[in-house]
Every structure is written in C-alpha cells, then in structure tokens.
Length: 43
View 1 (cartoon, rainbow, N blue to C red):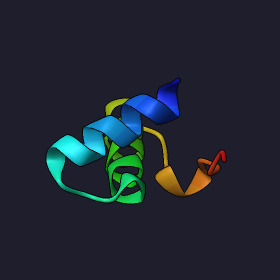
View 2 (spheres, rainbow, N blue to C red):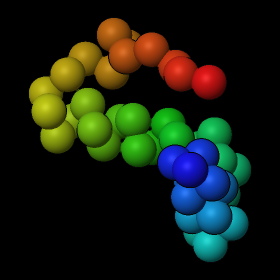
View 3 (tube, rainbow, N blue to C red):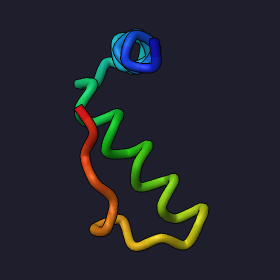
C-alpha cells in the first residue's frame, strides 16, 4: 500500500518513484538527525 501511494505521488509530481523515495528518505533523516547513509533500502 505504501508503494502504491508513493507511485501515485510520483506521477502527480512528475518524477520517478525512486527519486521520490530518495527525497523522502533524505527528509526523514534530516528531520530525525540521522545519517542517511546508515539507512537501508527496503524493496
């Protein structure tokens, strides 16, 4: 379900879902003061 929402948001914004995922991850890391390089990609 989360993937479906991400795909829909990517279409609305006109970007690839991978780009949307990266931006979302970067924002999460910045918000919670986490080193983004320590986060794992989940597929």
